[in-house]
Length: 151
Image (cartoon, rainbow, N blue to C red):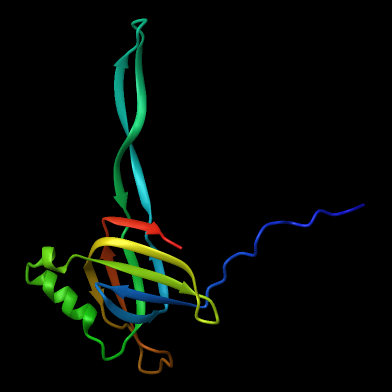
């Protein structure tokens, strides 16, 4: 009995993520989640030609889920300065665009996401124990007004 050869490509296996926000390359990140869109359904009530009342579900408002990112702590203060800009009330000035790239083991971009008008809504320092033997990480939650896959 012959078996069919799948024409499907292998799944994407990423090696590392790289983050750029507002023109600042923040280097590699260790964890990423979020970054989705939900389009809410809205009811549209109508009366058809025959007089029959109908309720249609039509696309309503789009809601973007925040990005949650963890990155190793280094000397770069970009995230903390960005958060401080929002804390000082300059959210309009803090809004910027960003890119998240998934790289393969050779360092080539295999998937890229871009997000629009983002700003940091939460920034946390490390949580660790004195006997912990792992790199310290900071976590940022980023609100976005657009999120799409570009590669």
